[in-house]
Length: 251
Ligand SMILES: NC(=O)c1ccc[n+]([C@@H]2O[C@H](COP(=O)([O-])OP(=O)(O)OC[C@H]3O[C@@H](n4cnc5c(N)ncnc54)[C@H](O)[C@@H]3O)[C@@H](O)[C@H]2O)c1
Image (cartoon, rainbow, N blue to C red):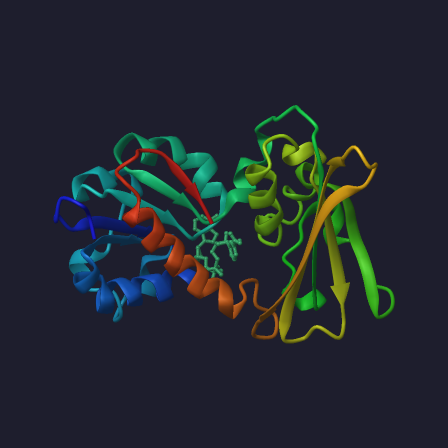
């Protein structure tokens, strides 16, 4: 995988749905791809028992340096990025699986509009603060509509797609990308994400616009859809294929 022929060493932080899938891929396909799994850390180490080789279980995240990772993949919780992201970046590249953690970074300019709507069954949400108290009344309820920055703290696990959009459009950022969270009782088995982008008006007064609609199959109540698991694996491979450039990658 690496251009110099040396296996890239990958550490995984978080051993839930995404972490388990990535670890499984790394153990089975990693060697042929030039990737070596060097550690797995989970808040509850007991969850790794029986499926992660003991030598790969990292008990203390602060000791990750001893495993010499080239890339650390965070698939745990935004708090991990907030608490340990800077420390991880001292020793390795970091693939951020929970980009809603970065909602506190400011961006300024305004050039276009970007609106991301995420809809699923209310059981698929993990809401906090005032959003947790909003009751779904009726078939389809808009729980939040406004700047992504205002949504991330109260839906940190359901706003990652919007946070990634905010980071991918630095001219708009967290304050100007609009996030919409919708509880829809009919969406028991999927997450639906609509991205509506429009540019500034051209000489004719009309704007360029793109609208994508994604239906991601999901287990009832799951925060993470099925296609997302594959997307994370592809992102991990993408990080390892890039020329060696230190820094942060987003999922
Ligand atoms: N970028 C995206 O589009 C996208 C899509 C889906 C999920 N995610 C994010 O990826 C992360 C993992 O998702 P998942 O479906 O594997 O979740 P999961 O709940 O299945 O697993 C999360 C793991 O992290 C651990 N964990 C939870 N809170 C923690 C905390 N505060 N500190 C340390 N560890 C903690 C849990 O014990 C569990 O092992 C979540 O933050 C989720 O929001 C991002």
